[in-house]
Amino acid sequence: MTNRHRRRAFATPFSQNLSRTGMATLALAAAFCAMAIQAARCEETAANLTAPNIVFIMADDLGYGDLGCYGQERILTPNIDKLAREGMRFTQFYAGSTVCAPSRCVLMTGYHTGHAYIRGNGSLHLRPGDVTMAECLKAAGYQTGQTGKWGLGYEGDAGAPTRQGFDFFFGYLSQTHAHNYYPTFLIRNETRVRLPNVVPNERRGQAEGAGHASVRKVYSHDLIMGEALKFVEQSTKADKPFFLYASLTLPHANNEAGREGMEVPDLGPYAEKDWPAPQKGHAAMITRMDDGVGKLMKLLEELGVADNTLVFFTSDNGPHAEGGNNPDFQNSNGPLRGIKRSLHDGGIRVPLIAHWPGKIKAGSESDFIGCFQDILPTVAELAGPVAQKLVPEDIDGVSIVPTLLGEPREQRRHEYLYWAFYEQGGGQAVRSGQWKAVQQPVGRPVRLYRISTDIGEQDDVAADHPDVVAQMKRHMEEAYEPSPHWKWK
Ligand SMILES: [Ca+2]
Ligand SMILES: [Ca+2]
Image (tube, rainbow, N blue to C red):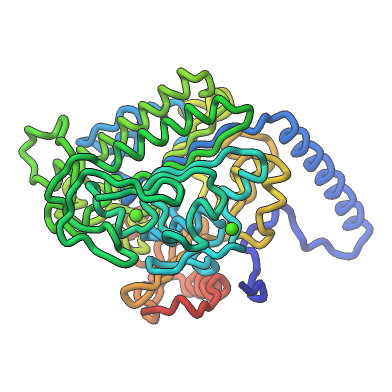
């Protein structure tokens, strides 16, 4: 990957426009002093922290409005709501992409979808040289495990999680396989584990295992959650921190099952609701996931490691209209516009909760404008210098540790965030401060929204602000690095 076009888009913390006068020299000296003090303070902060366990829980296609703590009124999510009450809730955090694979690539490698290697769903897998979050944490002494859906490599290739820094893996490698909640097999490390479900006309090739089961014995989410709990329990026996990446598959649809795609073993508290069947399934999936989060949090308490564990909860992209689900029924995107595959905020703005008792202020809220590429530098900073040194210098993320810990040192901010989406004629979007620009499909005029006051992106003000539109177009040009694998189509 060439770095020729790389120009980092971060706001600088202090002015670079000092003139060549004596005053300027003095000011420079003062600035260097301030930097030195700041650097010393950073080192001190890092030295005082014991590297925490890190649990990163990610739902699949869960919308900004699907959780009680983000305004959901029908679907019960008591455990995740508790997580938010005890931790920090982000209101302006974004997923890496509006669909699965690229969002996960941004999360794992820290490059946005104008720079990342995997920028869309498809058959590409991570290369050995791609540096992942798991590799950084493993190098820093962490035990690393993933349960759930990977999406960045297939059986036997270099992209498999066990070849990208994970000591342990259980779940689905292929995203299409992951559609099926009652599969005939899942994968433990690099070996298939047979399951008693029966799937007639099961798909083959890279989608192997996808289909609609006729005999449903074992629900994959329950196994995935169970393996997550086991990994945590076993990890706490060793004298090392652990990293769990629980990339849950709920509430994604089984796209092979038509209008019966919201597969769930029981409808729980929604069984008697006067709702369409897919909506009952959708709600039951989310509540079942919430129940798993509750079990995980309880286990951390029981094992006595809750206070030294940083837990994140988020989603990989906005809500879907698949498997019979109507995202409007439960207002899954909240006040936002659009769903999965849109570059309006409904497709990309996601819940993010961070929980670390005694370190992250309970009941706090942050309007920091961040994105998945920020997670890698954040966890690497917490893991220490060995992990930090492995993170490539040209990634697009910034560490949000100062925000999480409420530190006095300055939080680096993005000058802008960028997304490229390569399906459906392509699309690009930029978020910069109060502004949001969307060009979807590519080639159409750029629409501009003052998102600070127009969260629903209803009022296109491009005609009133040609200077802002020009600036947003410059950001798009700067952020987009051509790739032979990714063309607007
Ligand atoms: Ca997804
Ligand atoms: Ca690698």
